[in-house]
Image (cartoon, rainbow, N blue to C red; front, top):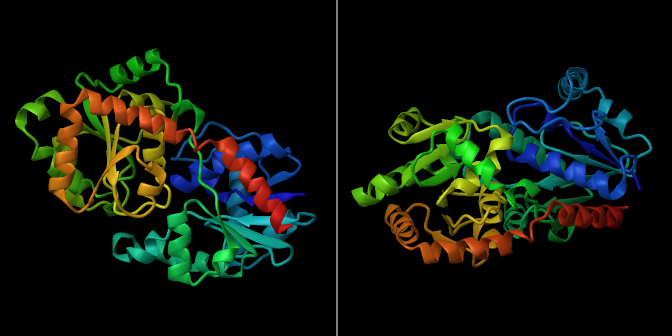
Length: 364
């Protein structure tokens, strides 16, 4: 069996999809061999993961983006040449003209642009509409959660028997963070006090304003003991939200090597997102043993199981109460942290890769 995976998102600025492809491709190759798992464009060993730029060298990046332009804007079937001799072409989110021969598969990451279109820029909505046409003609699909599968069936009318749920994974770095790495990252970002942490792109769906409201409504003594730290690139957030971040510790984009120790350094991880297809930051925080507060909507109850405090993300009072409970109770924090570690152990990339290979074999 030979599979070609569309790896174009690895060449551009991207968040969740890039994280998925980076680890997924590496673990698929580890399990099945590089000859069985190829990429479009052809990429050898991947460089360090960064969400801000390409993980490949300059020539693969240049030629890959040129191929993307030829395929999407000139209709030249460059991806078809890469897929010759392959059993399956697995398309990602950027390519609009995948090969017409052979089996076609794809991964559905979320349906947020369909369910919450007002929270996304026009470019995102147009891209998702184009991708939906590919999903409809694909031979088989992976959904990263049952919630995402259910949404895609309901919204796009996809056949449920065509979709296999395979949860994404968590990088090994989050499961065992050395104490000296935690100390260094606290020193690097001058984190002198215990803190509540949020990590994610600053965009309306992440619901940062409700988190800020909940934090500022806590007792002053708690806010003096625990600061609020927000990390992540400024996406398409409203200007008012970005201005409010000046009132807390806003770290901006965090390089990938710092993510695991920064997460592990937190006292509580708060993630009141309005919608998630999987929720990498939540799964990563659980893997690091950090107690999690997150939303009771979309995939988040599925991913956290009984290992997190779930709140209505539109309720400032519920979020504030959950923060207060955890911050005042070391015992509850320890219990949630241990439950989180156990739950996150189910989200390993080697498990995801093994299930994905079975999926591909079934398609063939």
